[in-house]
Image (cartoon, rainbow, N blue to C red):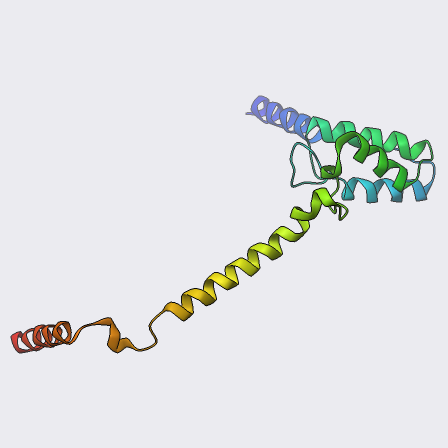
Length: 153
């Protein structure tokens, strides 16, 4: 039993120690810049996570590169420019409004407007009076069936 406990303890400690990155900064401003950058830049593998949250190898490499650039004294804008030049606007969570990103910015609004127009058109086409749903013959037949059903009970 003690051996099993020791094996479990050793296995869990290996998991806990796995892949924890710590970077030492000589200036608190640089550390703050680094934190802002890794939260603003998108992981290109995960696509829905920022660099800080992703465990992908590329995200680790990008965090390391960001750390190196911040330590060299580059500003946040310079780091972002480097990343965009290398990986494109997709690396940004908030891409700039440009001709190649117009669909990204305007797409949700266009889809919403189209959906509203389709909904309005469907509502206008729907008959407003329920009398038009059944012909007179169909209505009489339905009444007869209902009377037969109530008489059987």
